[in-house]
Image (cartoon, rainbow, N blue to C red; front, side):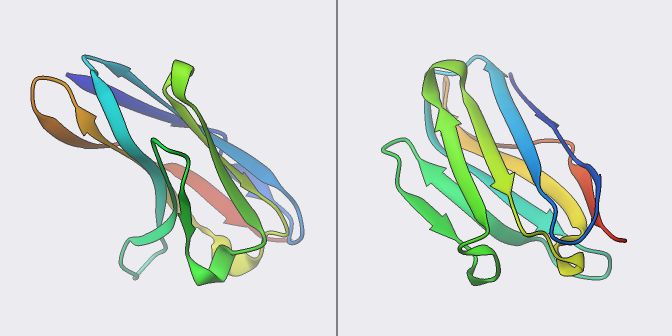
Length: 118
């Protein structure tokens, strides 16, 4: 069993910053990718950013230059630094972890709310 726990959401004014964290724990042999997705009301879940075990990153066009994803492999933790936040960044942010234990797994966190509003 693998647990994925996010933290760091909240309310911030436009132009502000937030840092999300996500820690994976449990029966993990290796982690392939860790990433962040978001879902706004009435919209589908979308990729925000993902980082591979080798450190390669991929970002949604809408967050390039404003968000930075990073990971601490030893702690099995991924971070999302979000700067210059806009109201359209308001959503529930979900952490995703893909890896292997006794078999390949794909786990989601419970989600953390990010609200950008004045």
